[in-house]
Image (cartoon, rainbow, N blue to C red; front, top):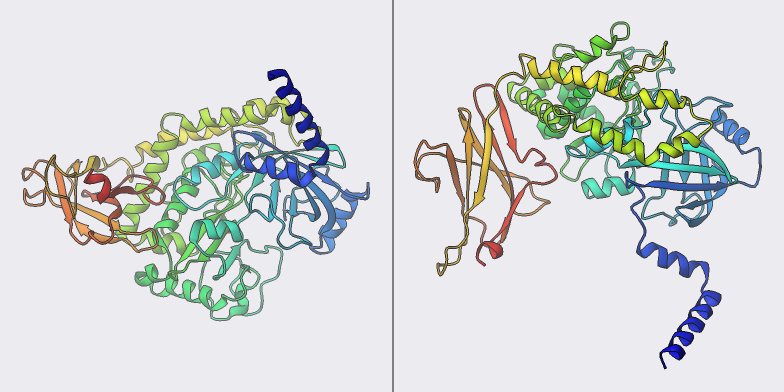
Length: 546
């Protein structure tokens, strides 16, 4: 009987194989498919064009415009028809190169076509990054503290020939904006100036995307690319406020996210950014609350691969290692830095973010362990890539030591070990910060009455002078502020015992809370948890009463 049942199953399965269409298999695959941007797996993209002269055609399309070449694609085995492809990059593009970066538009013809919701694929050729990990590692660190793209590695084939290993970076467009800001139709700019375009008459020269204010909207056109249907007035309002009334900048700019980006650029010596000479490679998106939010982009030159901060020659290795954490503090040509750091409160927060990024990623070599893991993911694909800019010897030593006699690309650990030591001892960062620990929420005692308020305590040491709790009852709300006290009257135990408490009494209807703690001493500010932007503390009354 069992044998007959097995035979029946086999016959039924064979019939299923015969009748099942490719769509059927795609549906089965999709149920268990891996995240397209998972950095711990190697993705695969196969492109097919009708012509064998596809490279020459893409060169021509790139040189003479932004048209796309029609083709087909398979992404991790899933087939897509009528996609569009073009070479991408400005300074990285080179006609005739065997390894230009790629832009793949999955919805080129069918506007609804996507892969896991992504309609655009952007592949970086990792120019001037012999390690191949700068972007994947850099974005992974950035996402701990701010909205930043996902990234991983992908093998690319064209007409069944291996084209090479690329870095697959999430496009900062519709799905990214929806996921991070809850909308995608508001004012949106790419801040990547056209440095070869002549400045219009009456406009300031060589200010790039540095957010200086100009009275004529045409002065903005060569320095910013509008990605939304409207928004030039919004950008002018932002730059005017930043430069002429910085005390009110928090009304139009998410200052905290901006300080995170600036701290990140400085610690990682990411100078192909706002912090470098061209004030480039970032986006600005205005969220539903009317606040502009900066978004980092293009990290293949991070970790000191690009070396110019403006106003002089490139920095040498020692200059990169000892880059001042307060670089541009007094530079009027960098108002996003100088105007914000002129505010003592913002400066303290900025230095706190520098300290957090440093301690959580570089003080104990965490970044190097992760970089080595990432190299193992794509090592074989790298060696198989005959079109790569660097040989295997450069790849192997690039994490540790300088590569190139002319470009002199620093080894990542060669740069960051010395940088971490320098920053640790820098006078602006050497002050001991407040320590926050033992954050607790009071629950219902056995057989007691149900709790209807949130009673929160935290141990705060190192001479705290000001302790606040920032809280909200829903993720789309603005955080409210309340003072925490160590007075023996705020559910905090004994007065003066370094335990601070607060009771939030307007929570009954909400039932749940998100919160984080901000604690200051004379020279520093500490946030708990450090990644409060993405993962604040949470509590709900139902759990506390069980």
